[in-house]
Image (cartoon, rainbow, N blue to C red):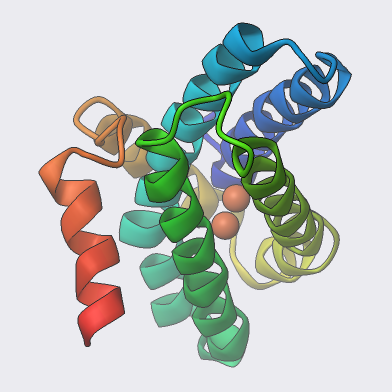
Length: 166
Ligand SMILES: [Fe+2]
Ligand SMILES: [Fe+2]
């Protein structure tokens, strides 16, 4: 089985994009359904962010120092998404700011995934060998098993708080 890091991350992105469309198509008054979709989005993003932050970004940064700026920008974009996810997690879906906050989350995560897919991944694929990408992917698969799934879990929360107060 291929464990190519970029293939794995793109698969995650596809799932996230599908949920974004579900949310957008759910209709103005579908509060219950939209609440469920947003919880799924947050769970997926929490795991995805964790494996990128803990494995993909540091490993690639160490192997390809020329992508350092993009990695630092990615940490910041993930941080913004983390804050929105944390707020949404404790909000009621019929709150007047729920849809607006979700829309901002969707816009910013879409922008981030587009940049990863169109610019960053091609550079990384050119710069790293097949074996290196397989090894990084295998590490991410392993880490997924213990990754936090909710922003309220300590390991996810701690990251966001550290970023806020540091
Ligand atoms: Fe990312
Ligand atoms: Fe990603």
